[in-house]
Length: 114
Length: 113
Image (cartoon, rainbow over all chains, first blue to last red; front, side, top):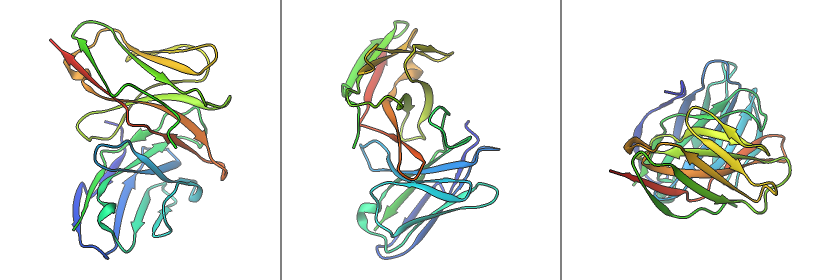
């Protein structure tokens, strides 16, 4: 149990729709990162937020966007859903944005696009 | 842009030590090596991390070679519950000041009786 919670756990969307995924970070953790994990692959970095500012982004198109709130919880928004967006979406929280701090993952949101 | 190479699968007898190798020959001087494991598509579980020195905690030991081009994760007494995909990861600094965990495809460890 990491204290990182994600909602919903599963959802099904239709191609072209928009989706919002939510992440509640571990108490006191001010850094949240989002990852996409396709079936059979390792997680791929989407972006990171530190104290409500995006401070890093992976190779994902602009239709993937995010927010971090003053309580450090976070949202991942995906517009114009495509079939290839079907994946497990993971968020990870850590204390501070440094390299020497453990990041703890939530259980993920399984998104299916049909 | 994974920076690590791991064997796709390994087997280990229960009660024996499991030694999982990883190559990260392009690692930079300020990048850390992290290990996570993932069971049945649950969220990855943190195991251990290090920069230069060997590290040990209640779960495992991490041995990093002097040139930092490879490392080994050691589970001293593997149990059936250690069956999982193990990811060796390099934590990379980003231009915006953040950092990311660069996952590869991992090693599927199967612990058997």
